[in-house]
Length: 160
Image 1 (spheres, one colour):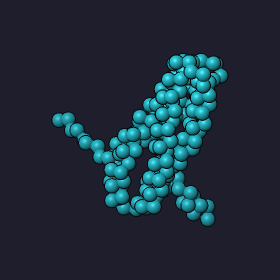
Image 2: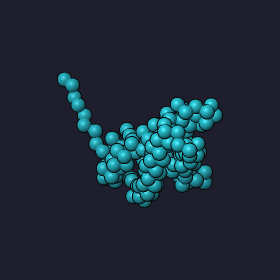
Image 3: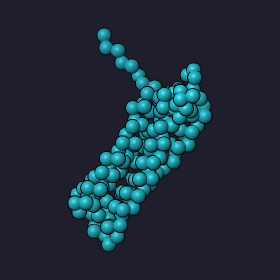
């Protein structure tokens, strides 16, 4: 007999959370390729990848609250780690939305050959770099909630 297991909010959050972190990295490489090879197709593809990252950030961020409710009931969970992760994730989500919005603008300017279409890829790369900084912070703070081996304080304790 086939058993179907319904996943909880924490599991759904874990399934989704890697996508908005990895997708901008892929978009960044594509955009750099578009600039290096002067390829409008690569630039448009990068814009679409950045838009995808913004879209995927929506359900990822939306499942965070439910994941928190599940995880905070587990033994050994530090509420401060959850709060830190939540604060960084909020900034990361906002930056993903900004990156997606700028990418929509970039796609439009590129397609319609607007006079400022050459500036948008550089602006997009800058926003992407900032977004990736917060992506790294979000991933690390999220991982620290359950993975004690990656916490800096624990690493320091092991050295002493």
